[in-house]
Image (cartoon, rainbow, N blue to C red; front, side, top):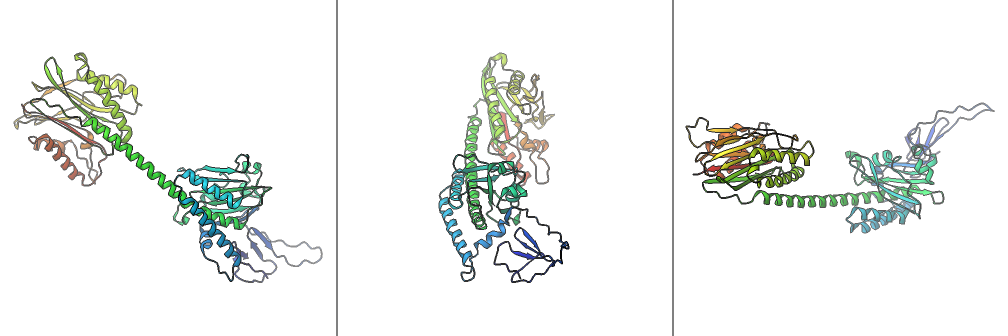
Length: 514
């Protein structure tokens, strides 16, 4: 007869778990934890006894117990019957005391590093190992040893390689009596050479793993020849500790992530405020001209920028309109935008010999090429208008065609497209640009824009397009420029129909009023 007295791993006869006293017979196989016993028939004389093949087991020699931690936790949390399970009730009370101690100790700790050190404190208080290490999973599913402690001056020896698959990925908890006899650790030379003989490991899980969520990591303890080997009771305690620790580690990681997110938000807010200060400088007031400019970033910061300045020449006042669109989006594009704006500002202040739009674009392109990676470039439109005559000279560096909207209905071309006169800025080291000319009569409007407007898409993937922008500008050409800009933005929002804008939107407009 054989009876299992409540072991967690159970006892099996011929592969069936028994739940009471069970009779066994010759030829049957009994499995107790990692051991398989085969009952042999009686032998006559010296006849060789037939030996049935041992039952295959996934548990190698040397492992005292392997359990799924997520299966073990509910049983550890259930209150035992004091009348039937006094020993288990004692262990249950010990675990409750441990968890209460852990939660009290970890409640006030918010930093991850401080939390890991407190976890090691409790590990050494309760288990007295020679070494303990905590491993956390990285985004690429590899493990980093984020905290380790040893007794005395001995160097840390426990590595995660031999335990990652069983504990850190499968969520198994295990006790190893002697690492030298354990097939799972046969390749771990660092452990075998270190003098570590008994191992105890538990995954860091704070919820069941059936939802596909992997453990956060694992806790591994090592004991040498002169330290008592770990037991099944130690495994139960470590599983409970690891579960409590996992919850705190996840909370600490979320708190640090929230703090990092807040810090990034503050930096983005500051970056945007600096960028807005650069973009919202008061536009010049030039007699006979109405000016308007605006920028809406698709993210917190923009990769577009514009400049509208007036400067004195030998022929009088000259209006300079510059709009540039840097490749890319977000913080990287905004940093390049700030550098480009600073370079452009210096070039616009040059004397008469360097004021031609094609000359400025060539110098700006060369500076940008030398200061940025090959993948970074910018498109731009630089126009210079004589205030008194309305004469326009412009260079377009691979930018969207500017719109010159005529006031007169009888004009041969009610909307003139001012196309590209050269390659994008910074694309090649020595790029030559040409200059083109036009003129604004009274009431004409020059519209510069970035491709965030014409390439804005609706839920069906259709783009807003140049033709739609042209029609809106033509229909509302006599409206004040601020109102015209609002009309364009409202029409764009209706077209997008809730689809997020993928790129920054910038418009610069100038109308000759006299």
